[in-house]
Length: 601
Image 1 (cartoon, rainbow, N blue to C red):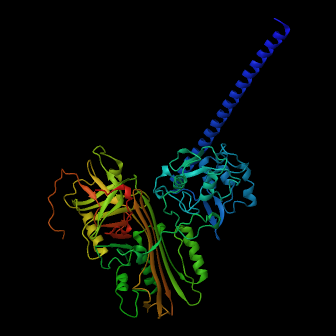
Image 2 (cartoon, rainbow, N blue to C red):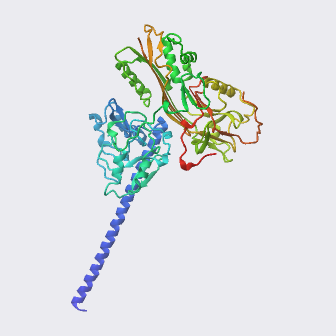
Image 3 (tube, rainbow, N blue to C red):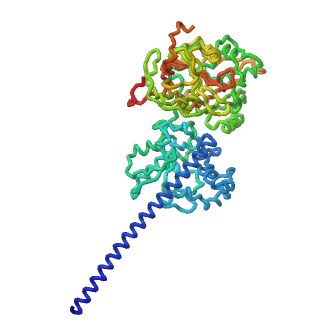
């Protein structure tokens, strides 16, 4: 072989080896990059999972998730949701050094920015020192409605289909309460160059990866907790979180818009059994507070039947735990009103009452607030739509309860939550739903015939609970039996017109006083999780036989279906009086079933 041939052969071998080396190097680099990427994804998912566990631990202790932002007067954001979560992430020392009595960007708290817990820094996206890219999406429909605290029961679409925390490029310090608004996150997600899958923490604690090309409507739906319905309650939405493209109004409605729902100031007012009728103790307690001022029954310049009924039915406050309500009697001037608003904010942050200030003439303001958030020991089930029969219509409405398949003997829902108070037939029965909490409140559902008043209905139900019918063989539901109840949801303001303009003649030193405002606002929901109730009352005074019983077959499974008018009552376990009564006879206050659900049987 000639020299030229030998050199060419050796160069060929070297070249081939170099190519092979380069190919192996590229393959190794690609493998290493893939390994690093998978490692970053695993770390991100692990840290999001830790945040999810911390959120659930916080909820277990406080019965709510932390608010997205804590405000100070003037809607000034002071702290974000990450700070109260620190103790549940093993960061108690850092939590102790953080000053909650100073804003997040005070000189003291700024010293802690560089100590950002790594759990808030997700390595799949770039993150600056001291900043967090595990972000909340703050909006009126999201899991984080600004300063409002959310509970598991508030997520009507389900925890597993609601996004809690997202990974998003952020240049904000971890202590900054600003985070992101929905429009900002959506725009970021679809931004040019953002082509990788994004990790998000769902409400049930699972971490999902969402495609950058996911349909916008689907992404927007995943960010909401109740579909299109707003979960934020109140009028003071912080300017810092306003998004001009997403405006959702409060669902508070005036009672005048509901033809078949009425409010009772006294439980002795006549009851129309064909419509919904609601009474809450909070207005009666306000009236009783007025009666303490007049040192006896309130007297008026002319006969007034509603005044007489209110005077005749005082509510014994011993029937309510003091932590669940407040009663106030103050002047309506600006200074007293501001102090009142501050006291209410501390005890009932969700109340947000709207007061008219009167500095011109002496005025007396009487205010009451009653709040209950009571959960079942065991969550009941969302069921198929229920066909509710009122006197004029048959409507398909959402429902909850429990249906046995014959294999659930000893089910904790049946044994701990549902109690049969009385049973005559499938058309005449009383069910008591037990709840958790210090007062062990009872939700009493009575499918009975209406009486002349709500008070008489309740009296009859109480008597039957004390001495149930012989047909109530078993106090618990058993195999083959079922419970089905319509979901009730209302947020209504009512003005008691018969009282407005009435002149009160026996307020000391003010014989010519006039009632200028007499109203009540009730936000109420009954569903598979339990009951939420927030009732407020406001009075402003300018000073100057059941028929033949069907034959009972003890072997036939009973059915407890509230598909016809019934009485609902709420009371604390040891109380003699109920604090809420409602005759439910019209779907006005029920949740309509979605068109695709069909009609339940």
